[in-house]
Length: 369
Image (cartoon, rainbow, N blue to C red):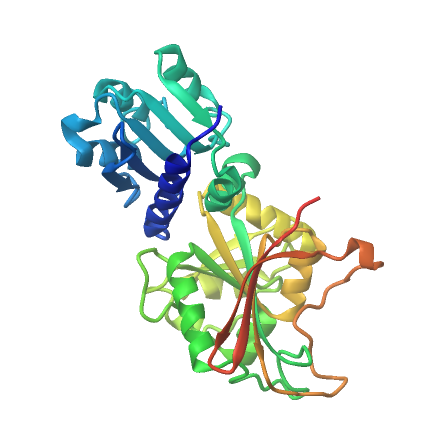
């Protein structure tokens, strides 16, 4: 079933509205909705503004009021037909007397997929599904990853010189990127659920791994630390009481080191796997059980390499500075095992390239075959 130009325009507006919920609605999806009258004019708009709050459809219908009867509802995601924290949106749509519903993406969750559309059609509502579907699916990619695969969406981030290094041979890395680039990183930290680094980065940089200014979410700081080597004098351990901190250790981690971290206020999660890629898979499954939706992996090279080796990077945000570091011993952005042929190399579907100060900021999603 096709959609009119007016409805496609309304879908673009609904997608724009949905993004206002980024960082506020997870683990729910971002959703936007627009109500059109018979002439194609907008009479109501809404978006899912916070987790546990009214869904986009309900907000748009309330904005339209009695004029919604006989109108068209344009919504980025299939309306739910099950009871969750709020009543089914399909009930609200039918009660409002909506004549037609235009849907962007079908709900990817197994318990909901297609059922909202079926419910509306069974009640006599005209439904067009898959309108601007690619953009609508991209909007809910992190939600879909959690719903379908049980793990968070993984964003790999790094800052590097023009010749691909993330530090000098001596380990100095502050600051490769510009102040404008670092501001973008802090905004990214402010809307994700967790940030992860390896013990090498934690020891070399003694980072805080916080968002400045803080975002709406409680950011979980994670260190991959197989041997529980993080010093209790580190900023991460010293601030664990104020900022949730999880140390992911391996099966060989010394008990006394684990106990010291726990006494300092860190949560210690132990993997049963001694191989890094296997431990990463196990950790992501644990984060999925905790309903974490977005994970930011900031490195270093060994950790980033482990995530790429495991095929678990979904998005890349790379900041390239117009600086030449040189040196065969200077670390590259991504280590790990790497690939054996160019045909196996992960490739990005580029979403944006922009200038930040003197840096080039590239953002893209890892293309899946």
